Length: 173
Image (cartoon, rainbow, N blue to C red; front, side, top):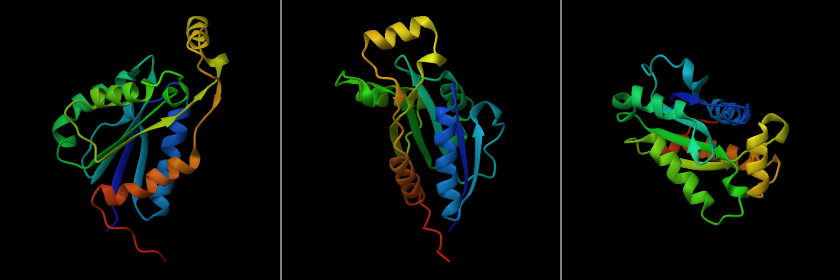
């Protein structure tokens, strides 16, 4: 059975949006109808059989648009299968607790919604796109600059989602 899936994402510098597009493409290639939309543009969840929520992690918190989206759509989200991903540099942070802190921030932003699958993807950091204070913080924390997105891992997670969301795999031609 194919599904109609909404992938709603928040983004600041475009990295999360690019990841959302890849996830959407993988799901579409597997026979599902997917709407990939900026989270601020979503007006209704009507007609969707599943929701994927994605957002960037900055300074230990998920973008506030994610929490607002969950709050505004709480009742519907509690009735649908939901998956979630967060994008940040925690996997590249030398602090061994950074990944768990990032996952905890995602759980907090989702409030009462318990995803059927959740993941942290490494993002990218272009120092020229952040302000001076943020650049200094990143230097002090020894966070490396670069594009750390693992496109194979992102595609693999997307391919596993339909089954985790309760949909049978789409038939292959």
